[in-house]
Amino acid sequence: MKVLLRRDVEGVGRRGDIVEVKGGYARNFLLPSGSALPASDGVAGQAGAMRRSRDLRDAQDRAAAETQKAELERSPIRVAARAGAHGKLFGSVGPVEIATAVTTATGVEVDRGQVVLDEHLKELGEVPVTITLVGGVSAAVTIEIVPLD
Image 1 (tube, one colour):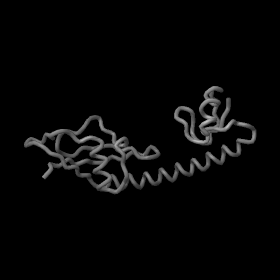
Image 2: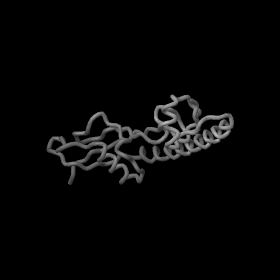
Image 3: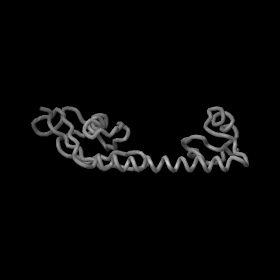
Image 4: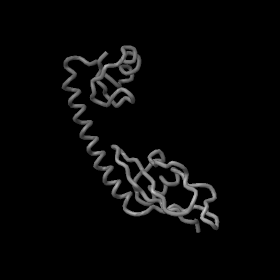
């Protein structure tokens, strides 16, 4: 069954796309939830308008993400943590602490899910961390872990 998506649906398509889905999925989920409309001959114009507005919104989001990226990459972000005499941390610094420090230092809202870490940080020093922003923009942020005074 062909449907016009009214919003992004994971694994199916994006807003404004006309996609082919199983009839049961369309009747039981997409149509009742308002996520899609049945695709008829007159829907093509509406689909085009939805795609244009989606593309405009994506371009605006990407421009805002580029601005945020420049702000994040400007200077190292300091995170204070309790550490021993040899530079080992008592515990670790994870995505939650990094997101909080980035938001506090720069004013850019960063969620812990946007912080890409292979493993928690367990030593003092500077570490490069990737933060994924909207629109596929990634910022390489330097995190400086300093001892707590």
